[in-house]
Length: 333
Length: 270
Image (cartoon, rainbow over all chains, first blue to last red; front, side):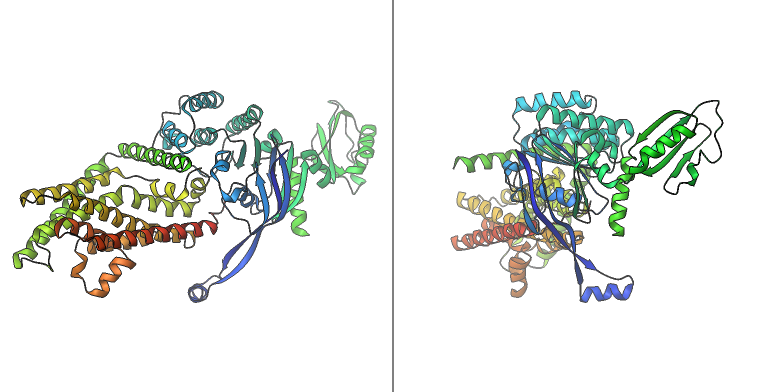
């Protein structure tokens, strides 16, 4: 059963247009010029119960606008959406009690008071029963190691500690739909891993659907079985990560390690003569080349026969590179 | 009916929780309290000296005697305290939250967004004004040997509630403009200036056009004068009914405007 259903969702913003300079500024006071920006252009998708989906796109692609429409903050220009049977932008309290929006760049905890007091505020707002509040708080404290943080004012916490407390505070009411907008932004690698493993655990324990935007592919690779890619407000890909790489990557990467004592010919066994083979890294110990996908078997075979190969691997290129290529090619088109 | 009772109970619990958070915030910055006491006392002394100067020259100011105007000053301080306790700081927070995008979190909460926005920040130090106001009225009545009829107390409380509702609605409407015009902080400063200068005097001393402005356009004087009048000169049922009518009008107008604004909320950019 689909938890999130989106059909032809569209959002247009009206933004002021003004040229630089004093004259234009004064002119804008009298006559304001505006233009329409299509932030999201008729996108459609479904997300099933318990699914964790990565929502990818460059800055300004329309990711946050889409998440905000699904969280009920923004009214769409046209189109339909249903989350857990609710129309998000009607913002009925039943819906708001069943979902959470967590934004890595913004805080909702009260700045000057201890974390636990902000949690108590959420208990009143979300009408969480005392017994549930205690047991969930214990569970979250355990999973995120919050014990020493609960009594500290938020302003005294580090960025990572604050994010852990934000995430826990947003999940105290145990939402079954979670929208995460850049949850690991600015965090160190260890803290990113901590947050990721927590999200995976929350999803496993509660069966909640999770929609995640992130610029860190580590988040997406660790958490998402499926990715939705949008660019300029349009949907480019909806499927698994491997499918994204298959669809958008035209090349494979071949890495070889040379025998320790062997001499390597300067022309690399004639490899340099092939126009479609790009050498991306070379040292006395090994070599990395990028080749068109369909040529990979032949080039690998040639390398094995002409070079002193101790080890050879054929891989898809790094996911970051593929995504970048997707966006660049779309911009050029 | 049960649903309405539940909703009211929930919202009262939410308001109570925010008041508690306000108190906790306040404890973090204890010097604020000393500053608030000093501020209230300076304001009171200035006003009392001003009145003494005026009543050194005359015994009446358009029907109001010295004691009557002291009661009005007391009502002014009560209004100022109640507004400063929750409404004014919450409106400032609302404008800031719209600008920074943190208003998103208010909208994702399962409670009435207008209630949440209106109680989200509490400044307990403003209670000083409230206490000063009650003290001034009590002291004036006791030193004049004047008792109060229960009807006067009832009329005073109704008029005060209406006055606060009117000013609250007005401030909410001003703040709601932030949904379209992002930087509007100064508008509250302008209101505060008007409230501080016009609210300390009975609305009847102003020329008719200004009286209309201070009742309907920027309803600062009306909210202070009618409750004071209930104690000093007495008010008739028609005036009270008019106060209730104007309050309902303002509350409804501000509510509709709020709902209209939410439909146009675009949020701060990611």
